[in-house]
Length: 221
Image (cartoon, rainbow, N blue to C red):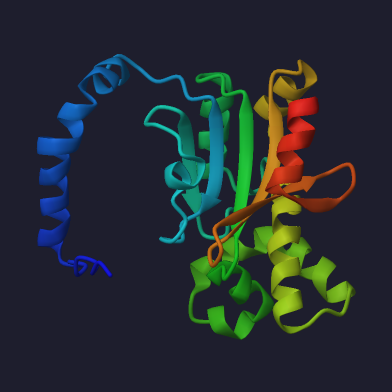
């Protein structure tokens, strides 16, 4: 059995990581980085949680320059005009300037933001987080209306939040215009940290599909 190298969580460890990238990884991909130095043309705006366990490029096996990533607590997209700021600017820039062809909103299991949404007492000393989570309140209401509890409620609110944020992102003028021209597709995902699987929202059927089924449907589209 091979032993893992002990994790160095110091600032020095970060600097050594950069050194390793500069001396080993970067030279091996010199041609790619030469191209990227001239500009970017990502195909997908990937909106996901700031959770350190969610690594978009690793999950999707994409290269630098392919994803335009927006991360925040709870993979939230405030409805247009509700809270104009960083997320709204990212959406507008990605669609109108970069011309992304896809938007993916990716939630995940064991999400601290969704735990806070279900248990507001846990965020009472975090006023900024509490205010931010108001953009997900409708997801909580949908779960409470179904009278779910425990792990079932947690999974449901994660999924409902993805549905809700897809609704919110459609209110952004840049997205609405791109959709009217069939220039963009939207998709919702839930990433299971424990088993490495992704489930994909089928909005027509209003259910999350296993990845294999979603691939078959996309292939046949």
